[in-house]
Length: 435
Image (cartoon, one colour):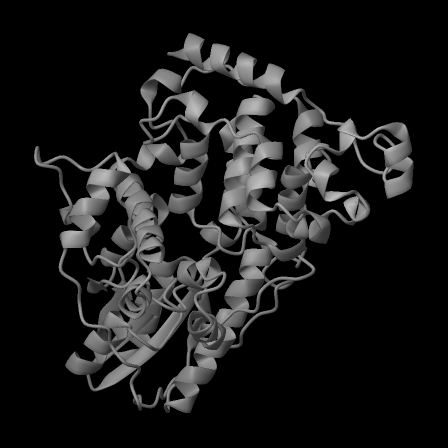
């Protein structure tokens, strides 16, 4: 008996329930990945993320070959390509990892109309997020009670990688280049893709794991099993929470979770948006974060919140503009988590806190989280000579201090494009009117 294992964003050989289930039930197993143009050139198309994907696939193929198999590559509509491959190989079942984003669920339904599709867990720390319900039987919409329930859920055993795999006996195809897929790399210093890198970063105390979680180079279940850090475990719960919310509220992909804010009036200033995108707002922590995004395809989570607050509260720009910009550049761009975080910081999502609790002063945030200016100076080198006491608000330096530091505001570094105190008052008025 033959089965296909359809890889999507589960690009690993360790802790892979779908792969293990196929091997237990079938003599011959054919791993396959299908390049889906609906994603490659869809609403959240991304050159940096596609390049990361290609690196993950190259390593997955090597890991499969080392075990006697390989990765079959196809390009086209998954329902058509998987049906053709199943007929060619004589496969009676297609195994895959269940995914809960709106696009993935619709795609899986189309595939299931053509082949016998069996979905297995592996995307989350908790196997079935749909089973998590409040005492009233409804889905969770607030994190803290979700987290309490999440902690009580049973966990599956972490699986090892198979030592050997049955030979393919079928042509695999060639891994395309980024250009052949219609994209180009725009990030000069991206993280390397692949399971080996993911496992190495895990051993180094879990640094910058979000891209590897997104593409399933390592599972949240294995990470949770390895950690004794309650805060890290809580971050994994946040990831599951946003997937749970989008699973039950697919409309959140395009509109505010809180209906009362769906008619909010947003600024449409392209000038302000372009300054934010370029990291030229005059607020050092905001600019450092936006430049890190363009340079590495990644941004520290605290800074993501600061730049999100600045876009939606200080500049009064639509959170969807920021969501799309992040999805264009982030190698860890995950629809559920990116959407959930943007709605959270814009005060239009599941967060029950009032808007004033999510208005972050960039200068105070910088003083708290980057007091020595290490992060800011790394990504905004024109501020390198500014003394620590002026780094969060360099426009407050005297003319003599600006000259002495080699950073004249308005010449070497932009003036602030907005007055934060005034913007805060206007934001509170705007949200008050919307309520």
